[in-house]
Length: 298
Image 1 (cartoon, rainbow, N blue to C red):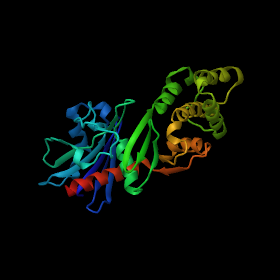
Image 2 (cartoon, rainbow, N blue to C red):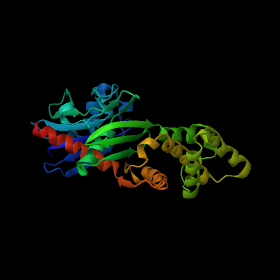
Image 3 (cartoon, rainbow, N blue to C red):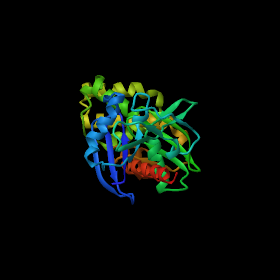
Image 4 (cartoon, helix red, strand yellow):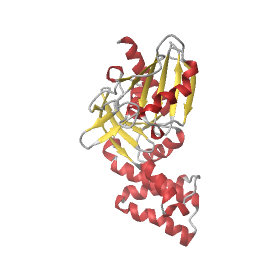
């Protein structure tokens, strides 16, 4: 092992022990996300995961992306401002550590002044995609709790917008009146597609269509799997309607795991949008590798 790559999110910590040739020696993860740690808890959480692998008598580089660099994280890494290239080694925040075996750097996120928007972690996935696809010009969509749509051109993030679609789905399906009608799993492709079409043609009907799921369950025994799929379709359809300036007439790269990205792919392809799928975890690692490579040459 010559260095460590780390993706530190709100709810998780994922690390890769890296060899000199960029190969992954080991992958480890824990539930010690930013959301459960105070600033003085980050170093112990990292050491609990990789401490025994650190060589004695030398300082091992650690390159971190994600929420560890937020205001509530380990140490704030100030945002880069669009239009900009995804932040890399020269913009990292060097963090002091008690253990001399660690040399920790945190990558900054990216901000947009107007309309106001921020990202932390997704910019590293974008960097990884661009490292594997140099010259890409188009839209990168990063589905998740807070879905990002980023316009990328000439190696820069030109602009982006965030949609709380994933969080809305979780809140509505678990904490609203719809929790009585929407099960924890199940998928109906037809119900999803119909809901996407409905809300894209009439976005103003979203709120009424959402309550309609509960009413149909009570009056017409709406199947739970169909209700869950329709809820997803209504929310993703509303997102696509609002994000139309990003994807219309563009090629779109979807960075996400299959379960999250598949509905977006289906909805976009129904609009005749060419879509490329890429694994989000791999893109994160490739982005961290690109940042570390630049660190080693500076």
